[in-house]
Image (cartoon, rainbow, N blue to C red):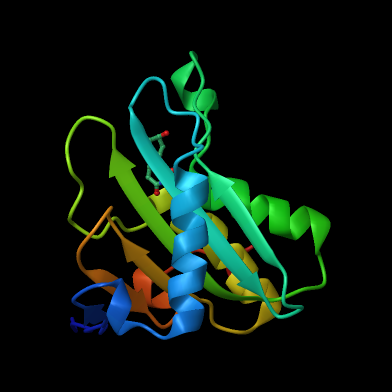
Length: 160
Ligand code: THU
């Protein structure tokens, strides 16, 4: 028997102002798109902005449905859009923000498990880490240097 230890680490910023201007801009675009989320059921709005290596920015917000599982998270709306429109481009950075209509969201909101799996597919495809920044509405911002850092022991194509 043996035990393995997998290290995962994050950089925590006290607030958005501590980050480089480029990341502030990206996060502010995520905030703008978050406000346009279609979230009549959860009242929990999520916005995502992706910076691609061709300089384009791709945005997404969560899109809910009366048949709940038919809705989609903001991260996957953005990443699938980027994969559709710019299939050759690499995703360099990703900014995520979430806010509830009913109570203030100060904790940084990480991408859910399904989104992590979906983002992993693109990180592996492009063979370059995606820097991920996530926050609530205000307060701390977490930075992960890659998706892999958020999903140790990930399932990917090498197992097929
Ligand atoms: N949601 C996201 O957009 N991203 C996540 O990573 C977690 C959850 C959305 C899905 C649903 O519309 C709402 O937040 C509440 O779960």
